Each structure stands twice: as C-alpha cells, then as structure tokens.
Image 1 (cartoon, helix red, strand yellow):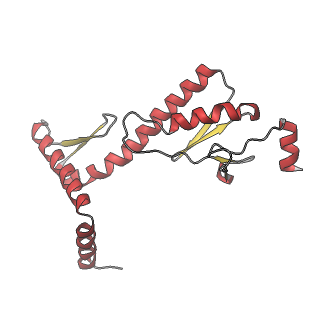
Image 2 (tube, rainbow, N blue to C red):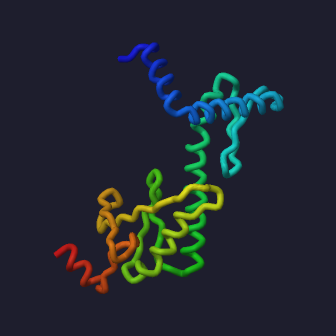
Image 3 (cartoon, rainbow, N blue to C red):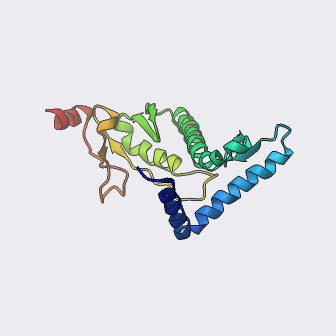
Length: 177
C-alpha cells in the first residue's frame, strides 16, 4: 500500500516527464468549467469527435478527460459497425458480422469470399473521417471460437492473411484430419 504522499510524488514525476498530458487535462477541465457557466444547471460538458456530450457537475469534472477516449472508441466502433454492415449488405457477400467483443469484430467469412472481402473489411476498419491517427487492423483466424484466434500475417499477402487455393472440403481435411 502506498501513501498519499507517494502518490503525489508519482504524479509530479509523471507530469514533469509528460507536460503535455498535464496541459491537456487542464485544458479539458477548464473548457468543461467554462461551459458550466452557460448551463442553467451549472453543469459543464465535453464533446467527443462524434458530437456526443457528457454533462458533469463541478465535483465530477475529473471524469471529463476519460470520457473523450472511452466514448470516442465506442462511437468509432458503432460507426465502423454501420459502415461494415452497409458494405456487406450492398455487396451481397455471404460474410456476416457475428459479434463484437470489446474492440474486436468477429466475422463468419466463407472460404470462397475470403480473398475478395478481407481487403475491403480492412479498408473500412482502418478508415475514419473523424480521426487523424493511423489505424491498423490485426487479423486473426479461428476454425472454432473467436478467442482461439491465430495471426493471419505473412510476407506474401502483405498482412491480408494466407490464401490457399483449396475447396472447403480440402481445407477442412487439412485442418482437422
């Protein structure tokens, strides 16, 4: 167990090492307080890149900093889900989104669509008109369950995954018999 003094020393050392973090936190808190003056209930708010607002009372303003990445990530996932769903519906692929687990999409992709659909899925997932940072998709494949994923990277495929010219039956035999 650490003392409050040790915690204070840690924070001071952290902010001395990363002064832009302290400036960012202060900026978010100040903006939230400024907006509280305009709100009839005396609550400030922060807005993420998707326009979602979080209203906070003075004693909750510390939550404003965490709201930005957390809500932004959630809204990015929702936006990506809509774009993926639209692409799959309009393209008439049989590929389906089975589930979303935290920050992962789980797909059911027929073997005969793999080469065609994966590059488009990657492009959709690595693209956002609201984020100015590069996004990288890590592909995994699993024959049984999403949490048993295996990397799909190789030098020949440039990260799209290993492509095999096999029928579904041949692939099944190669994997399971």
